[in-house]
Image 1 (cartoon, rainbow, N blue to C red):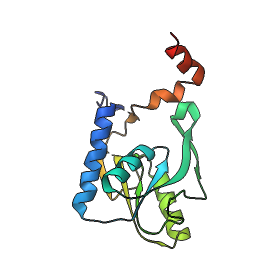
Image 2 (image 1 turned 120 degrees about the vertical axis):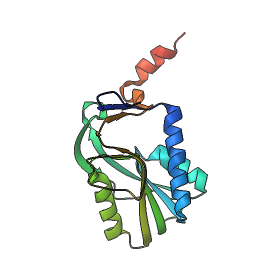
Image 3 (image 1 turned 180 degrees about the vertical axis):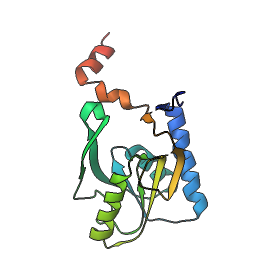
Image 4 (image 1 turned 90 degrees about the horizontal axis):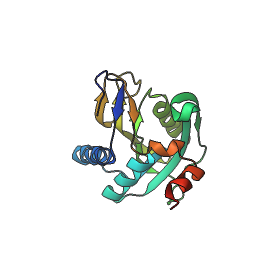
Length: 174
């Protein structure tokens, strides 16, 4: 649910999964066939996993990180892993790059640049995200929602960012 001022978008688990299903439908309806899904950890892991199951394709993972400060709400320096974890030894062929959102677009643009320059076995590369913010410098090949007001997206699992093990234990002690 988008707040009246357009500054915050609150997403339930149910809505989150429906959006991933809508993304799968867009990809399917495009007719594009791909060999591997490459998700960006952490935000692209959940959508990547679900898309991998729907399309029956292997899931590869590349770690990136830029949102670390202030419980993950403040963007900092972008770190991109040098290696990709894939069940097929080396990522190759047609690859669908998946993340949760194109916020500024800098992460997706940097990852695509790295993939195109350092992974020659990739013959075709397309991107998919759930959300694209209006101010994003990147436009994914597949996206479900355009957010022109650039709201902060409150995803349903973010409560775990501030739930250390001792608090979890206290919650479950009888």
